[in-house]
Length: 355
Image (cartoon, rainbow, N blue to C red; front, side, top):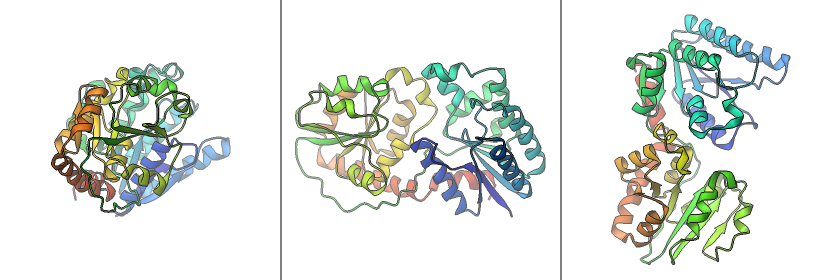
């Protein structure tokens, strides 16, 4: 059986998207998929090369497409309509077309009210997304909420959907044994884009950080934290990647999953690589209740603490007893091993291929 995964892979993608695509390629290859690399369409030549490589997949019995990395309806390219026609052609010549949905760009734009992208949403945007889901034989989504919005908007049959729950993450990092010391304080870390526009609200909460709680931040655009007078309990570690990144995570007690309140509507649709990174590094998570889906899976797998706001989470993290922390950590290690091995995407692909 010939199985292909179509995916771009280049340095112009965000770090999170690059990681997600790398993992889709890695874990699908372990099920026998071959990667067809799609170049950026920066010129006429690269556009021709793009479509020629797609045509290589016509011999596939199973074709896997990660969305929105492929078929993003918000891209400014004038070739969007040609993309739709190519997809229609593929669906008629490939035995099984599987779409792995890790984001919903139209919903994200609507909920975040991003002015740059909202101007690009038009009837063609919805038509292109509809075509993709209609042509798919199976659609892999995080959860029922993500499936619901697709079903309601485009009238897609519920039989097409397969739930994968969590983003897998193929980090080459393995936990060293670490003793959990009995102490009043705890170390918390937050990793992500630290631009003032994204996490300025977080800075206000950090001024209320309880005594005995040390807080660290990792990520780009965080220089402004250094200008604030937080004292020695808060440190900005800069941008870290690879083993250095996971090593820094593994040295504290909790990883914070937090987003600004205005994103709460969108956060019902899925998880993030942030959550998976913490779990792979052996960190129980702290999750604000308005991060709805992450809060749900945190409770399901008992891998962290869910609180009503950041101050509530800081206090709960500070006073958790060692027995409860050990329970969380053991559950984290178990889930982290699954995530590292690609358990969730492999399970969903096997179901989609009816293996």
